[in-house]
Amino acid sequence: MDYHDLTAAYALDALAPEEAEAYERHLSQCEECREQLAELSGPAAALAFGTVAPAPPARLRAVILEQAAAERANVVPFLQRRWVARGMAIAAAAAACIVVGLAVALSQSSHTRSLSVSVGPNRTATIHVSGLATAPHGKTYEAWIIPNGRSPRPAGIFAGGASSMLHLDGTVPKNAVVAVTLERAGGAKSPTMAPILSAPVS
Image 1 (tube, rainbow, N blue to C red):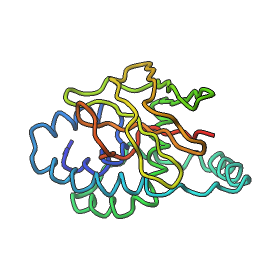
Image 2 (cartoon, rainbow, N blue to C red; image 1 turned 45 degrees about the vertical axis):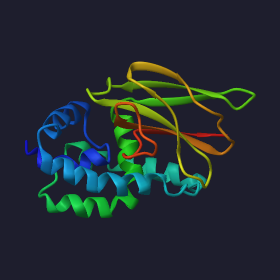
Image 3 (cartoon, rainbow, N blue to C red; image 1 turned 180 degrees about the vertical axis):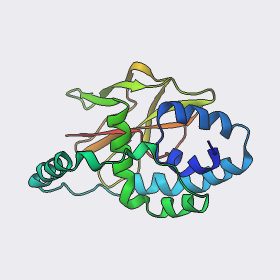
């Protein structure tokens, strides 16, 4: 396995857990990959958080499921594909505005990850997260509150594991989104990675 070819997929959180762990071990020893990841992480995070996508037509989900059922035999698993060359990493980042939502959705469904948000009458909230591996050494999971049309704000950190619960810092306004990213130990002031999980809050 050429770990240099996995940088763009890692930036989009599109690696299987065992691939991500192996890549992170490589990352701690490879300055070139760290530089490439730094270049890709900013655009990926900006594209993921930049806008709130419009609601799809109600019929769209049914059409997609019908087509998927009809063509299931021809589907090639996304997570088993490999990037052909390092140059493809930059092209993949440029195309992230199209595929980042799909990559995150595939990652969540493949690894049975889930995020639920419980909001109290005073708009304080607790999140329940399941299916995440324990954060690697030097990393932590960080929760974000993303008010509609505004920038994300940090809402707490946690170590991950099979099941986690976190009381979010601050209040969650209506029509916001709660998201989770993997950040450096201690957390960050703004997201540096694309979200692993996200959930709308009414």
